[in-house]
Amino acid sequence: MATARANLISVNFEVFGKVQGVFFRKHTQKEATKLGLTGWVQNTPAGTVVGVIEGTEDKVKLMKKWLAETGSPKSVIKKCVFNDEKMIEAKMYSSFSVNRD
Image 1 (cartoon, rainbow, N blue to C red):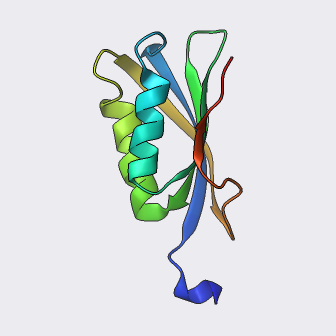
Image 2: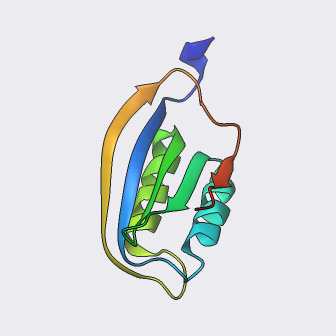
């Protein structure tokens, strides 16, 4: 059964720049949901935005590009760091949520 499915991956991210107070989390949730991804996003005390995205490799790749280059309309992305990218058997999250501080 698992072989008929596209490869699922999970990756952590942290976005640096002007990414708080500019609806970054809301737009991230909207974009991830549009792509059929699951995971979460939240602000950090350091002024960055962190989260996890899960989904098929092609959709995660699109989301990574969005996080690194697009973001919300009023955000200014200085850099985006991805780590702990790995293949997963199944998604851990059922939707893409915004975690409140």
